[in-house]
Length: 159
View 1 (cartoon, rainbow, N blue to C red):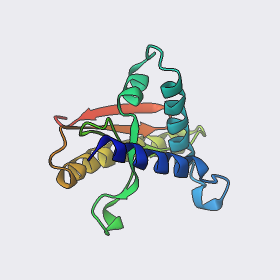
View 2: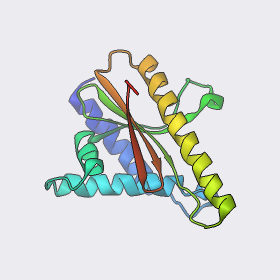
View 3: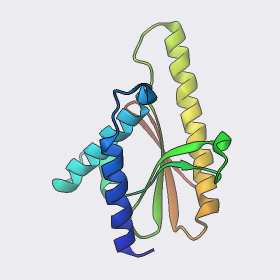
View 4: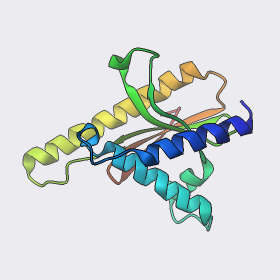
């Protein structure tokens, strides 16, 4: 795919993601808000590309283009999952992100729920990476990031 195509896809998806009304009941779980926050943060970094403060910023500056948003992991079979976000550097290197907002409430049940959700996000990320590899076998590299609220766990294909 040519660089121009990545730019077109990115502009279209970035505009769409940032335009989603998160106040509607359709997006009540907060995952879309978290995706928007990641994209807004990346946009700020791109506009002011200073030295990255941490690994998150390095990654967001490397994978500049949004390639897919809410993509079917197995085409037409949503029961196998819908991935949240795929970014690319435009050189056949991809970043597969699965994003979940964790409950902010305290208590034993909430703690257990957060741990289970975090594990599920991590498992989904690894599964989505392997399925993305099947869809794009010529990809040079694929990394994954499980985002559970503010916690990012990074995976390489070797993990």
